[in-house]
Image: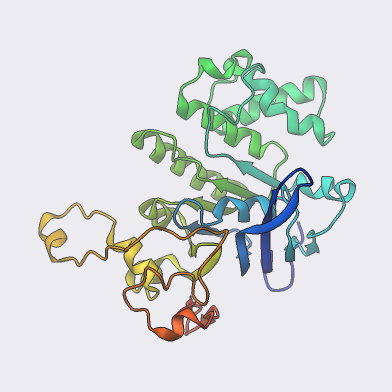
Length: 327
Protein backbone atom coordinates (compact mmCIF):
# COMPACT_ATOMS: atom_id res chain seq x y z
CA UNK A 1 0.00 0.00 0.00
CA UNK A 2 1.34 3.42 -0.93
CA UNK A 3 0.46 6.56 0.94
CA UNK A 4 1.10 10.17 0.10
CA UNK A 5 4.36 11.69 1.38
CA UNK A 6 2.73 13.33 4.39
CA UNK A 7 1.53 10.00 5.82
CA UNK A 8 -2.17 10.49 5.07
CA UNK A 9 -4.23 7.68 3.56
CA UNK A 10 -7.20 10.05 2.98
CA UNK A 11 -7.16 13.78 2.24
CA UNK A 12 -10.46 15.63 1.89
CA UNK A 13 -10.29 19.19 0.57
CA UNK A 14 -13.21 21.65 0.37
CA UNK A 15 -15.72 18.81 0.03
CA UNK A 16 -19.33 19.71 -0.73
CA UNK A 17 -22.27 17.36 -1.17
CA UNK A 18 -25.55 19.04 -2.14
CA UNK A 19 -28.69 17.02 -2.87
CA UNK A 20 -31.05 18.81 -5.28
CA UNK A 21 -34.67 19.42 -4.28
CA UNK A 22 -37.02 19.31 -7.30
CA UNK A 23 -40.68 20.21 -7.78
CA UNK A 24 -43.37 19.98 -10.44
CA UNK A 25 -43.87 17.73 -13.46
CA UNK A 26 -40.62 18.88 -15.05
CA UNK A 27 -38.70 18.17 -11.83
CA UNK A 28 -37.25 21.69 -11.78
CA UNK A 29 -34.57 22.24 -9.13
CA UNK A 30 -35.75 24.76 -6.53
CA UNK A 31 -33.10 24.35 -3.80
CA UNK A 32 -30.25 22.21 -2.45
CA UNK A 33 -29.95 20.23 0.76
CA UNK A 34 -26.41 21.13 1.86
CA UNK A 35 -25.50 17.84 3.53
CA UNK A 36 -21.77 18.68 3.46
CA UNK A 37 -20.83 22.33 3.14
CA UNK A 38 -17.12 22.77 2.38
CA UNK A 39 -15.13 20.57 4.78
CA UNK A 40 -11.43 19.66 4.80
CA UNK A 41 -9.60 17.05 6.88
CA UNK A 42 -7.19 14.14 6.57
CA UNK A 43 -6.93 10.64 7.99
CA UNK A 44 -3.44 9.43 8.83
CA UNK A 45 -2.37 5.87 8.07
CA UNK A 46 -3.14 3.41 10.93
CA UNK A 47 -5.08 5.98 12.99
CA UNK A 48 -8.72 6.13 14.04
CA UNK A 49 -10.43 9.43 13.26
CA UNK A 50 -13.71 9.84 15.12
CA UNK A 51 -16.45 11.86 13.42
CA UNK A 52 -19.18 13.00 15.81
CA UNK A 53 -22.26 15.21 15.77
CA UNK A 54 -26.04 15.19 15.96
CA UNK A 55 -28.18 13.13 13.58
CA UNK A 56 -28.43 14.83 10.18
CA UNK A 57 -25.16 16.77 10.45
CA UNK A 58 -23.56 15.00 7.44
CA UNK A 59 -21.41 12.31 9.11
CA UNK A 60 -22.70 9.35 7.09
CA UNK A 61 -22.71 11.40 3.87
CA UNK A 62 -19.02 12.19 4.45
CA UNK A 63 -18.21 8.47 4.78
CA UNK A 64 -20.18 7.61 1.66
CA UNK A 65 -18.42 10.32 -0.35
CA UNK A 66 -15.02 8.89 0.66
CA UNK A 67 -16.23 5.44 -0.47
CA UNK A 68 -17.50 7.17 -3.65
CA UNK A 69 -21.00 5.79 -3.12
CA UNK A 70 -21.94 9.43 -3.74
CA UNK A 71 -20.35 11.67 -6.37
CA UNK A 72 -19.41 14.90 -4.57
CA UNK A 73 -20.80 18.25 -5.74
CA UNK A 74 -17.38 19.93 -5.32
CA UNK A 75 -14.02 19.44 -3.67
CA UNK A 76 -11.32 16.77 -3.78
CA UNK A 77 -10.95 13.32 -2.21
CA UNK A 78 -7.48 11.78 -2.34
CA UNK A 79 -7.25 8.13 -1.29
CA UNK A 80 -3.94 6.27 -1.12
CA UNK A 81 -2.26 9.08 -3.09
CA UNK A 82 -4.84 9.02 -5.93
CA UNK A 83 -7.55 11.59 -6.67
CA UNK A 84 -10.79 9.58 -6.68
CA UNK A 85 -13.22 12.52 -6.77
CA UNK A 86 -14.41 12.05 -10.34
CA UNK A 87 -12.74 8.77 -11.25
CA UNK A 88 -14.83 6.47 -13.48
CA UNK A 89 -16.37 3.27 -12.08
CA UNK A 90 -14.07 1.03 -14.15
CA UNK A 91 -10.92 2.58 -12.63
CA UNK A 92 -12.51 2.87 -9.20
CA UNK A 93 -13.12 -0.89 -8.83
CA UNK A 94 -9.46 -1.87 -8.11
CA UNK A 95 -9.26 0.89 -5.45
CA UNK A 96 -12.55 -0.22 -3.87
CA UNK A 97 -10.96 -3.49 -2.75
CA UNK A 98 -8.71 -1.35 -0.53
CA UNK A 99 -11.75 0.17 1.25
CA UNK A 100 -14.28 -1.48 3.52
CA UNK A 101 -17.49 -0.40 5.23
CA UNK A 102 -19.27 -1.52 8.38
CA UNK A 103 -22.85 -0.28 8.45
CA UNK A 104 -25.03 0.89 11.30
CA UNK A 105 -27.83 -1.67 11.13
CA UNK A 106 -26.70 -5.32 11.30
CA UNK A 107 -30.30 -6.32 10.57
CA UNK A 108 -30.74 -4.24 7.40
CA UNK A 109 -27.22 -4.42 5.93
CA UNK A 110 -27.18 -8.20 5.42
CA UNK A 111 -29.17 -9.92 2.68
CA UNK A 112 -31.76 -12.09 4.52
CA UNK A 113 -31.86 -14.59 1.63
CA UNK A 114 -28.12 -15.29 1.55
CA UNK A 115 -26.11 -17.47 3.89
CA UNK A 116 -23.50 -15.83 6.12
CA UNK A 117 -20.73 -17.54 4.13
CA UNK A 118 -22.05 -16.12 0.85
CA UNK A 119 -22.31 -12.62 2.35
CA UNK A 120 -18.71 -12.70 3.59
CA UNK A 121 -17.37 -14.30 0.41
CA UNK A 122 -19.12 -12.01 -2.12
CA UNK A 123 -16.41 -9.25 -2.07
CA UNK A 124 -13.77 -11.90 -2.87
CA UNK A 125 -15.81 -13.06 -5.89
CA UNK A 126 -16.53 -9.51 -7.09
CA UNK A 127 -12.82 -8.60 -6.98
CA UNK A 128 -11.66 -11.96 -8.45
CA UNK A 129 -9.61 -12.78 -5.36
CA UNK A 130 -10.77 -16.34 -4.67
CA UNK A 131 -12.96 -19.15 -6.05
CA UNK A 132 -13.81 -22.75 -5.17
CA UNK A 133 -11.94 -24.31 -2.25
CA UNK A 134 -9.73 -21.23 -1.84
CA UNK A 135 -12.88 -19.15 -1.33
CA UNK A 136 -14.22 -21.57 1.29
CA UNK A 137 -10.87 -21.51 3.11
CA UNK A 138 -10.72 -17.70 3.09
CA UNK A 139 -14.33 -17.39 4.37
CA UNK A 140 -13.54 -19.81 7.22
CA UNK A 141 -10.46 -17.72 8.12
CA UNK A 142 -12.55 -14.54 8.18
CA UNK A 143 -15.15 -16.16 10.45
CA UNK A 144 -12.41 -17.17 12.91
CA UNK A 145 -10.83 -13.71 12.69
CA UNK A 146 -14.02 -12.04 13.97
CA UNK A 147 -14.76 -14.69 16.61
CA UNK A 148 -17.38 -16.77 14.81
CA UNK A 149 -17.44 -20.55 14.29
CA UNK A 150 -16.87 -21.34 10.57
CA UNK A 151 -19.49 -24.11 10.94
CA UNK A 152 -22.11 -21.32 11.12
CA UNK A 153 -21.43 -20.13 7.54
CA UNK A 154 -24.45 -21.98 6.11
CA UNK A 155 -26.90 -20.17 8.39
CA UNK A 156 -28.94 -17.17 7.22
CA UNK A 157 -28.81 -13.80 9.07
CA UNK A 158 -32.00 -14.24 11.14
CA UNK A 159 -30.40 -17.25 12.85
CA UNK A 160 -27.74 -15.00 14.42
CA UNK A 161 -27.93 -12.53 17.32
CA UNK A 162 -27.39 -8.79 16.73
CA UNK A 163 -23.76 -8.95 17.85
CA UNK A 164 -23.06 -11.98 15.67
CA UNK A 165 -24.62 -10.23 12.66
CA UNK A 166 -22.36 -7.24 13.16
CA UNK A 167 -19.39 -9.62 13.32
CA UNK A 168 -20.49 -10.94 9.91
CA UNK A 169 -20.55 -7.33 8.70
CA UNK A 170 -17.01 -6.83 10.04
CA UNK A 171 -15.84 -10.06 8.32
CA UNK A 172 -17.34 -8.86 5.02
CA UNK A 173 -15.56 -5.49 5.38
CA UNK A 174 -12.23 -7.30 5.95
CA UNK A 175 -12.65 -9.82 3.10
CA UNK A 176 -10.38 -8.04 0.58
CA UNK A 177 -7.82 -7.03 3.23
CA UNK A 178 -8.53 -3.28 2.94
CA UNK A 179 -6.36 -0.58 4.51
CA UNK A 180 -9.27 1.82 5.23
CA UNK A 181 -12.59 0.94 6.87
CA UNK A 182 -15.49 3.38 7.23
CA UNK A 183 -17.31 2.43 10.43
CA UNK A 184 -20.73 4.08 10.16
CA UNK A 185 -22.17 3.95 13.69
CA UNK A 186 -21.30 0.23 13.89
CA UNK A 187 -22.48 -0.25 17.49
CA UNK A 188 -25.46 2.10 17.89
CA UNK A 189 -28.02 -0.65 17.15
CA UNK A 190 -26.49 -3.11 19.64
CA UNK A 191 -26.94 -3.78 23.36
CA UNK A 192 -24.41 -2.00 25.60
CA UNK A 193 -22.71 -5.28 26.63
CA UNK A 194 -22.30 -6.25 22.96
CA UNK A 195 -21.03 -2.75 22.04
CA UNK A 196 -17.92 -3.27 24.18
CA UNK A 197 -17.20 -6.60 22.46
CA UNK A 198 -17.40 -5.07 18.97
CA UNK A 199 -15.21 -2.09 19.99
CA UNK A 200 -12.59 -4.46 21.43
CA UNK A 201 -12.75 -6.57 18.25
CA UNK A 202 -12.19 -3.48 16.05
CA UNK A 203 -9.19 -2.43 18.17
CA UNK A 204 -7.66 -5.93 18.01
CA UNK A 205 -8.13 -6.09 14.23
CA UNK A 206 -6.58 -2.65 13.78
CA UNK A 207 -3.48 -3.74 15.70
CA UNK A 208 -3.25 -7.10 13.92
CA UNK A 209 -3.90 -5.87 10.35
CA UNK A 210 -2.66 -2.26 10.43
CA UNK A 211 -6.10 -0.84 9.61
CA UNK A 212 -7.16 2.80 9.39
CA UNK A 213 -10.67 3.72 10.63
CA UNK A 214 -13.05 6.60 10.06
CA UNK A 215 -15.30 5.96 13.06
CA UNK A 216 -18.65 7.73 12.71
CA UNK A 217 -20.73 7.93 15.90
CA UNK A 218 -22.83 10.14 18.12
CA UNK A 219 -21.79 8.46 21.38
CA UNK A 220 -18.94 10.66 22.62
CA UNK A 221 -17.84 8.23 25.34
CA UNK A 222 -17.24 5.49 22.75
CA UNK A 223 -15.45 7.89 20.41
CA UNK A 224 -13.14 9.00 23.23
CA UNK A 225 -12.22 5.36 23.90
CA UNK A 226 -11.42 4.31 20.31
CA UNK A 227 -10.24 7.48 18.51
CA UNK A 228 -6.79 9.04 18.11
CA UNK A 229 -8.27 12.29 16.79
CA UNK A 230 -11.85 13.56 16.73
CA UNK A 231 -13.68 15.85 14.28
CA UNK A 232 -16.91 17.46 15.49
CA UNK A 233 -19.53 18.22 12.80
CA UNK A 234 -22.48 20.59 12.93
CA UNK A 235 -24.88 21.10 10.05
CA UNK A 236 -22.51 20.02 7.29
CA UNK A 237 -19.37 21.71 8.64
CA UNK A 238 -16.48 20.64 10.86
CA UNK A 239 -16.37 22.99 13.86
CA UNK A 240 -13.51 21.41 15.84
CA UNK A 241 -10.75 18.90 15.08
CA UNK A 242 -8.01 17.79 17.45
CA UNK A 243 -6.59 14.82 19.35
CA UNK A 244 -9.06 12.82 21.43
CA UNK A 245 -7.25 13.75 24.65
CA UNK A 246 -7.20 17.46 23.83
CA UNK A 247 -10.86 17.54 22.81
CA UNK A 248 -12.12 16.01 26.04
CA UNK A 249 -9.70 17.93 28.31
CA UNK A 250 -10.02 21.31 26.61
CA UNK A 251 -13.04 21.66 24.26
CA UNK A 252 -12.99 25.13 22.70
CA UNK A 253 -16.00 25.34 20.38
CA UNK A 254 -19.30 26.15 22.18
CA UNK A 255 -21.01 23.25 20.39
CA UNK A 256 -18.35 20.76 21.52
CA UNK A 257 -18.62 22.10 25.07
CA UNK A 258 -22.39 21.57 24.99
CA UNK A 259 -22.02 18.00 23.67
CA UNK A 260 -19.47 17.06 26.32
CA UNK A 261 -21.51 18.63 29.11
CA UNK A 262 -24.34 16.20 28.22
CA UNK A 263 -22.21 13.08 28.91
CA UNK A 264 -23.29 11.63 32.28
CA UNK A 265 -20.54 11.13 34.87
CA UNK A 266 -20.85 8.05 37.15
CA UNK A 267 -19.74 10.07 40.21
CA UNK A 268 -22.75 11.84 41.87
CA UNK A 269 -20.53 14.40 43.67
CA UNK A 270 -18.69 15.32 40.49
CA UNK A 271 -21.96 15.41 38.52
CA UNK A 272 -23.35 18.07 40.90
CA UNK A 273 -20.38 20.37 40.32
CA UNK A 274 -20.61 20.24 36.51
CA UNK A 275 -22.24 22.99 34.47
CA UNK A 276 -24.72 21.65 31.92
CA UNK A 277 -24.95 23.70 28.71
CA UNK A 278 -28.47 23.36 27.32
CA UNK A 279 -28.76 24.29 23.65
CA UNK A 280 -31.76 26.42 22.75
CA UNK A 281 -33.99 25.73 19.76
CA UNK A 282 -33.80 23.00 17.12
CA UNK A 283 -31.07 22.17 14.60
CA UNK A 284 -31.77 24.36 11.52
CA UNK A 285 -32.60 22.67 8.22
CA UNK A 286 -29.67 21.94 5.88
CA UNK A 287 -32.04 23.16 3.16
CA UNK A 288 -31.85 26.73 4.51
CA UNK A 289 -28.86 26.86 6.91
CA UNK A 290 -28.21 30.09 8.85
CA UNK A 291 -25.82 32.68 7.42
CA UNK A 292 -22.33 33.11 8.86
CA UNK A 293 -21.60 30.49 11.52
CA UNK A 294 -24.24 27.76 11.26
CA UNK A 295 -24.26 27.39 15.04
CA UNK A 296 -24.91 31.05 15.94
CA UNK A 297 -28.71 30.61 16.25
CA UNK A 298 -28.21 28.21 19.21
CA UNK A 299 -24.94 29.51 20.67
CA UNK A 300 -24.80 31.09 24.13
CA UNK A 301 -21.65 33.04 23.13
CA UNK A 302 -22.94 34.38 19.79
CA UNK A 303 -22.39 38.06 18.87
CA UNK A 304 -23.57 40.02 15.84
CA UNK A 305 -20.53 39.16 13.69
CA UNK A 306 -21.33 35.45 14.07
CA UNK A 307 -24.37 35.86 11.80
CA UNK A 308 -22.28 37.58 9.11
CA UNK A 309 -18.89 35.86 9.04
CA UNK A 310 -18.24 32.22 8.28
CA UNK A 311 -15.44 31.30 10.73
CA UNK A 312 -12.53 29.41 9.10
CA UNK A 313 -11.31 26.17 10.65
CA UNK A 314 -7.98 27.50 11.99
CA UNK A 315 -5.12 25.91 13.91
CA UNK A 316 -4.76 27.60 17.30
CA UNK A 317 -1.74 25.46 18.22
CA UNK A 318 -0.72 21.79 18.64
CA UNK A 319 -2.97 20.73 15.75
CA UNK A 320 -6.12 21.93 17.54
CA UNK A 321 -8.46 23.31 14.86
CA UNK A 322 -11.51 25.40 15.77
CA UNK A 323 -14.07 27.26 13.64
CA UNK A 324 -15.21 30.03 16.00
CA UNK A 325 -14.44 33.78 16.01
CA UNK A 326 -14.90 33.89 19.81
CA UNK A 327 -11.96 31.50 20.41
